[in-house]
Amino acid sequence: MSADLAIHLERLEHLVDPERARANERLQEDAWAFRPVPRIPCVLNYRDKVSKERKAPADWPVFPYAEIFRSPEKMLLDELEDVYVGALLGDDKVYTVRANYGVGILPSVFGCEIHAPAGNDLPWVEPLSPDEVRRVASSGPPDLDRGLFARALETEQFFIEALAPYPRLSAAVRVGQADLQGPMNVAAEVMGPDVYTAVYDDPILLHELLGVVTESIIAGTLRQKEIIGEERNRAYHWHFRVVGGVRISEDFALSLSPRHYAEFAVPYNARVYEAFGGGYLLHADEGLPAIRDVLDTPGITGLYRWTEKAEEFDVVWPLAQERGVCLIWNGPLPEGWRERADTGLILEAIVSGPEEGRRRMATAGRELG
Image 1 (cartoon, rainbow, N blue to C red):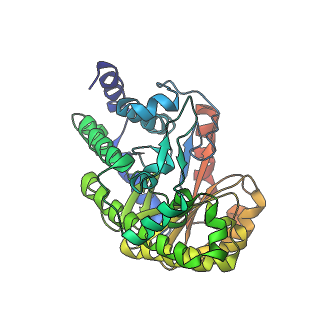
Image 2 (image 1 turned 45 degrees about the horizontal axis):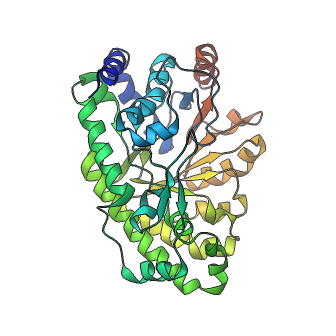
Image 3 (image 1 turned 120 degrees about the vertical axis):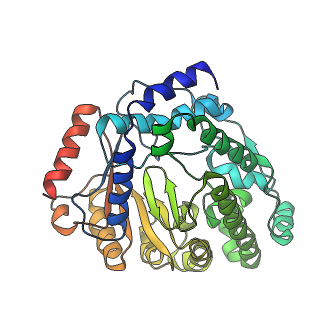
C-alpha cells in the first residue's frame, strides 16, 4: 500500500461512524421490505453513478478514469469518495466500494476484446464474429479465471486487505460485487448490433447464448460472494443494501418490444433472481413500454429508476408499490409525491455541496415526522 493511499484511509477512518453505517443498512432494509420507516431513506452524492454528472468537487483525490482502470489503489480512492461525502453529509447511504471495470467484465471472459479507456472515457467492448458467437453459445459456461473477471476478483481482495488495518472503516464499508450486467446486456455486448436482428432471424441462437450467459452470471456472482463474504440472498451495490443477492443492469432489452422483452429478458432475469433469493434491476431512462413485464418478473425485489422526467414517478410508483417492489428513484419528483409514499422508496440525489445536502436531509426527516 502506498503512503498516499494510507494517508487518505487514515483520514476516513476518523470520519466514518460504523454504528451510523449499520443504522443506514437497517433503515434501507425496512424501506425495501415496505416496513414503517422514520423517513424515506435519502442517498446524497456530489456525482451521479449513471450520468457521471458532478455538481460539486469533493476534498478528495480525483483521477481520470483511465488511471483508475489501471490502478487498484486509485480505484479504491475513487470508490471511497462517495463514502467520504456521505460521512460529511450524514445521509442514508450504505457505504460500498466495488471493482469498477465497466461493462466488459463478463464479455472479456467470453473472448471479447476490451478497448482500454482514455481520459474519462469508459472501456468499450469489441463484439465477437458470428462464428465466434455460435462457438460461445454451444460451448457452455467458460472458465471464469481470465479476462477482466479475474482482475476484478484480485481487486476485490486488494480492497479487503487495504481496509483491514482500519477497524472503523472496515466495519463500515462493504466491498460489493463488480458489475456483471445482466443476461441481455452481456449477450448484446457479445453479439453487437446483431442482437437486434437475432430476435427475428435466429432466436434459437440468442436463447442458447442467453442460457450460457445466465449460468455464467450466476457462477460469477457466487465466486464474488465467496471472496467478499456476502450473503447469498443479500447484496451491497452502489449505495444500497439490496434485499436479494444480485443486481441486473438492463439497457439493450428495454429497447425491445414488450413481447420480445417477455421472451428474451424475463425468463433469464428470473433465473438469476431465483439463484439469489431475488434482486434488483437498474432501469435507466428508457424502457417504460415494458415496465409491467419488468415489475412482474419473478424474483424482482427492487427497481432503480434513473430519469430526468418527474412525471414518470406517477407511472412507475403505483405499479411498483402494488407489487411490493422497492423503487429507488434517481431524478426529480412531482408535486404531492409524499402524499402517496411513506415506505418502499429510496431517493437518490446529486447535491451541490454540504448546505444543499443538509437541507435535503432535514426535509426528508420533516416530511415523515
